[in-house]
Image (tube, rainbow, N blue to C red; front, side, top):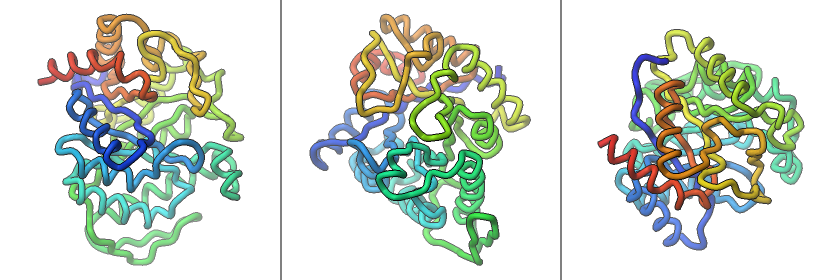
Length: 309
């Protein structure tokens, strides 16, 4: 639909390991299996490493593997701090960083840390300003910005990112405001489910094929001339055979059948489904959400990575 068929890319969310050595070994295994990106989430609760340290270690342990977040919670860091951290990480990784960012949404993160979970509209407005600050501070020369949420006065941070004009910016979500922002500002749009305003989890009413296709139409319309430059992706939350949801995870696959977030069947079935979603709907970037699904997806990734050349 976008005119140019993008090559497949595959990412995997990896959350923790028992040691630095084990973490490095996981990163190297991903790299050797045809995966393109190691991704970490950003939550204060649950079994998850902190992003910056984990990504730095993964980048130092590998040569080709890109590293990124799915996604930084904007409310956890001032964008000037995040701009400095990510520019440094992009330099240390040799230009292999992808910066995923979102509003922050999980109520438990906020409640246990004593932070206020503000209304979705406020968080999206703050994210929009943060993206402006990030791009401004990643650019050459001093940057100034006076917004409702952030104020920057002639700040010229060093180092600058290796990737110019900046590392790929990944925005994900399912609500119309976030998808519109992603279409207008991001390099990669990760299509997911809308989350409930109270941060209690995904909105199961937002699942299903028609809702997913509607989000793709929304991104295309909002992107306008930018659409051909966008990379569209999504997270695979079930693969091979359906499994029970992880107790610690907010992922809910109960309403996602017929979407690319649920890939059931044989490796050949999954290869065919991935080709369909890329060739017919422009989705080329697939992220494995649960490490438990890596074994069943490895032959799929290996085949498509080999075909990619």
